[in-house]
Amino acid sequence: MPAYAVGDNKKKTQTGFAVKHVISIIALGMVLFHFYTAGSGVFTAVVQRSLHLGFALVLIFLLFPRAKPGKVEVALAFASALTMLYVVAYHKELAERLAQPGTLDLVFSVIATVLVLEATRRSLGLALPVIALVFLAYAFYGHL
Image (cartoon, rainbow, N blue to C red):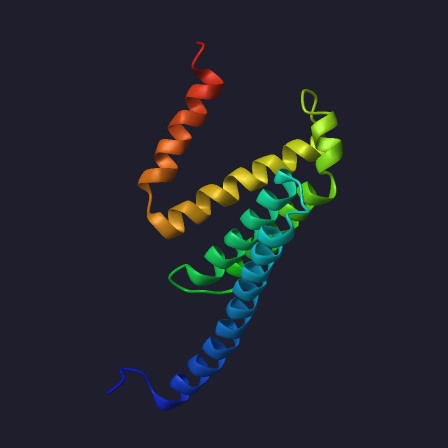
């Protein structure tokens, strides 16, 4: 016997059903994208990697919600997609100004780093993001 009331069960089932279908459609899109690029290989490495990371981050935020899932997961999934689409849209310009990134480049790179760390924490636990933060700190402050 379930521990919740029948009305709650119906509501959870409807929400779960819709979310499961959205996740399935995104996962199917990721599979089709990888099949397409495996067969034709028309994208550059930066574009393919950015799209792969965008798909993966969106799926992680939808599949590994907080204890109480809500709008935060949708916002993080949207931010993941937006950040990776920025890289896809401006990959040539990013390569040209690699040594001198603009303000928007830095903002999106910080957002992407935070999103990857949070997705790693949600899916694998706290150990790996802490290790990554230690190495990031060493990269910035190791010369001191």
